[in-house]
Length: 612
Image (cartoon, rainbow, N blue to C red):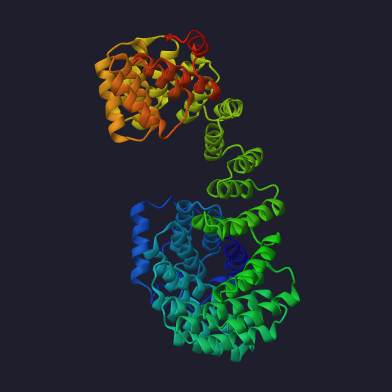
């Protein structure tokens, strides 16, 4: 619109500044003669119009849509009208439509029958959203000067803005009929017919345009789209072949035709036309994509994958398109038949787009799903080197560090991420876990307590913080805070397995609240009757309650599923309490061989005596 206004401004100014002939039309017979009209103080500058006066002028324009012959203006009036008009046009260009209308309506008050003034008032009203007044003044402009194409175009735009397509159609029809050399607007008229769903009339109008201008690519392309909407596939394909014949080196038309054939399962034709595009441009990725799709639909997987890889090798295939395809693969993974292909495409994407973080991010996602966490982390870290603002990627890196039990990496990456995202509670959680694994309970407490304050709106995460705080406070021998943290975690989730297990085990080690410990450990064993860790905890609670037979049964069940040194050593302790000292020593020796037993294991074996 700005360009349209800029081009039109010289034209409008020429209308108003053309000299004495500007308003020298036939006088209105109904108007009083000039000498009979009062001209008191003709040189006085008219005052600013009030709102009431502006509304009255607009009302008069609405009621008087018929063309009126302007009266003869005095030189002073003509000068003032031209000045108001030019000023109004300037404010339209500045997009100050209130001031523009104020000036233009003053010009209108002096010369209401001037088409250019009516036109510009219509435009200002359209741009300011007053479509009713825009319509009225636009219609007046057309009627005052029915040979000016710009006036028709503005009125058509006003109707189109109101979705009054039928009225806009009538305006274009009148324009083409009345204004010489306006056949080009047949294209606008045809587009309006398409917008209304009047497809046959659109085709007829495009046909008229072809008669006027000869064959046009734009016309063929739009006719093809209309035939497709009418489900006239053969005619659409004929138009497409015509486009290709007249533009054999234009890939847009060739690829559109190939895609049309492929969509309608005309596979041989699709391959033929796609290969035609490749003869012009051997690296055209769109042609490769079409071929890949056709071969996939024909169950020719090797050729489909070959074409897809060739498409991915091209920098011309946008990174976003490649990511979308990889996401479709990701949805189907893990799949032994697709894992290698997905990894290969991701590798090509990273190589072809080495400065795109999203290429490495999607590669990391694929490695995660296919089970290669170390490779996934490497890809994620490369993505972060290109764009470290993606919190989700930092979170994935930290999770992998934790899953791989790589404490140094966990601490390093959480520290880096917290510099960027200090208000993310999960990062504080894993930072605390890192310190906990490094046997730095005091630092772990600081991270957990700070992160806990940020997680108040996430009860599940809050329970995880409380569970870890229970562990580290126990390690710091701050047992009241440890117990309180576990209780808080269990308040949110009474079945929190980690809290139930660790709380009950630490109570047994401290020989405190053993009945409560038995209740919690028993609850876990009931839910997970084959879990060796929970069975060991339950056995140790029973051991502290001197229920050695019950402890033995629990440990023997645990040993069916695990040979962990701690469980083996505990089994030896129970056997010793039951009087089977030789078997107890043998179990202690077995625990020592496995590694990971308590610091007392050597004394137990040497002295053949139980130490606790």
